[in-house]
Amino acid sequence: IFDRLELLDIAIWTAEGALEKDPNDATVNRALAQLYEKRGAFTKAINSWERVKKAKPEDEEADKKMKDLAASATIDRGGYAGAESFTRAIADKSKTQELLDETKGGTNESRQAQQISELEQRVRNSPGDVPPYLQLSQLLRRQGKLEQAQAVMAKGLAATGGHPDAQNELAEIEIERLKHDLAVARKLAAERPNDAPAQKKVGELARTLNDFELREYQRRTERNPTDLSLRLQLGIRLAKAGRFDEAIGELQKAKNDPRRKGEVLFWIGRAFHAKKNTRMAKRHYEEALESLPQGEEETFKELHYLLGRLCDEMGDKPAAVQHYEEVAAVNYGYRDVAKRLEALAGGDQGTATSAAQDTAADESGAGHDQTMP
Image (cartoon, rainbow, N blue to C red; front, top):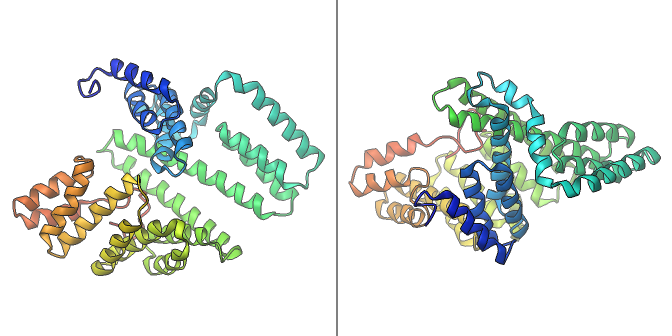
C-alpha cells in the first residue's frame, strides 16, 4: 500500500520490519528486492533476490533479476546512461565486479582469499587433478571474476588432457560471460527504445549466446545420450534457433523425465505454435498447464497468454477471453493482455489479430530467420 502511495521509504522500512520475523521468507524478500530496485539500491536488491533463490531454487525470476540488476549497477556506476557505444559498457567488467564484491560482505573477503590461496596451492601440487581447478574456478565465478576463472580452466583443460568436466566448466564461464553482456545490452536498449543500433546489438548478442549454447549442448548430449535434462536444453536452443522439427524431436525424447514434463510440453507447444500447427500447439500447452507445479506463476501466465492467442487465431473468442482473464487476474499489465481483452470485448477481431502480429520474438531475442510466439 505504501508503495502504491509512492511512499517508497516507508514501504522499504515496513518490508524490512516484516523480514525481521523470517529473513529467508521468499515472498517478503521478493517484495523488498523490487522496492530496493526502485530506490536504486542494487546491492541490497541482489541480496534479497539471492535469499529468494535460496528459499526457492527453481525460481527463474530470481536468476533473471540478479543478472539484470548486475547490469543495472554496471551501467549506473559507469555512467553509461548516455553512452554512445555498447562496447564500453560491456567491456568494463570491473564495475560489475565491484558490485559483486560488495554483495559478499567484508567478513567473507579474508576467508575467500584464503580459500583461493589454498586452491591455487593444490593446483600447483597436483596439476593433473581436475577438482582443484573446478573448485577454484567456481569460487572465482561466485565473486564475478570471470576472466580469472576462464584463465584457470584453460590451464586446467590443457593440464588434464581435455577432461570433460574441465570442458564443461570452461563452457559455463563463457555462457555466463555472454549472459552478462546480453543483460547489459538489454538494459541499455530498454532505456533507448528508438535507438536502432542498440536494439540490433541485443539481437546479435542473443544469437551469439544461443549459438554457443546450442553447440555446447549438442556436444554434451553426444557424450551423454541418456541424460534427458541435456535433451531438454538442446531442444530449447534448437527451438530458439528456428530449427523447430529438430527441436520437437529432441524435446519428445525428454518427455519421460517427470521432473521436467511441464517444461518439455511447454517448449514442444511453442515449436508447434511457431510452425503454425495450432491444434498441436494447443494440445501441448494444455497438457503443460495440467503438469505445472504449484507456485509457477510466470509459466502459468505465459501458458494462458499463449493459449489465448491460439484460441483467438482459431476463432474461439470465448476461450481466448477466458485465458486472457486468467492472466489479467494475476497481472493485468502482463504483455498486451489488456489490449487484447479490450479488442475482443469490442468485437474487433481485426485488432486482436493485429495484436498477435505485433508480439515480438521470444524474450531471448534469439530468433534467427524464424521467430517464436
